[in-house]
Length: 292
Image 1: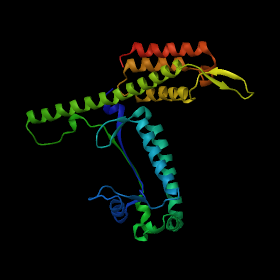
Image 2: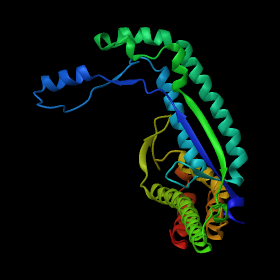
Image 3: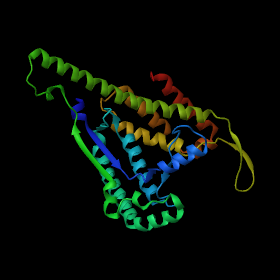
Image 4: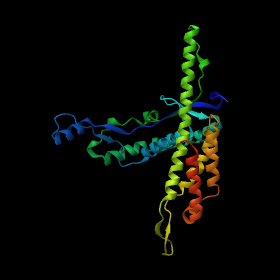
């Protein structure tokens, strides 16, 4: 199956008002106070300091971008990401939910914006300058959530008037670029798997640490988070959908890890020395078997 049939490109752009402003006057005062002979720094003030509604919107935007990068593969410097068709419908469904969540939070911020500005006037004292705050009617334009899906280009997409030789050169170059980008995308999946396996191997090697249980008894136990297992489970599910070239080695490694952690919990790995040793041995076997 060609990459054009196995995946699409997606551009996701989320923007939010920064709520920050360069205060040239204060910047100059700090430079003068410190004896600087020239502009040595800039003072960026938070226009809504003391409130958190804008930060909630910004944090959500950041978390959606992180999720987007986890669910897609690198493609171009321009921002397009490769989205395997096996993951398309689940991605689209979740993205639509996140878009609604984002705009709901934006609407909540806009509704409270006038009182947030009033609160800021109290919080930042003489740094407050009302002219630096967009009017409530304009503030909504500071927030955007847009995405577009596009087909992966092919060399045959060239529709230009050129000599046969020039056209062949352009098509060959396009084929080379697509091949390089597909390789980069697949290398990232191998890197994600390698990082997960290395982390598991290291944590399962760590010496047990003394811990006191609920009844005051001291016992030795391995110290790691539940995410050591849950992240591995999530990665196995993702690898099954992101293998756009149907790389048999990647699928073999994925299935090996999936089988290794089937039915395993973090508590089991902490408390059962034999089970922990067996899981570590299998993880190390995967690391050894494949050329990461």
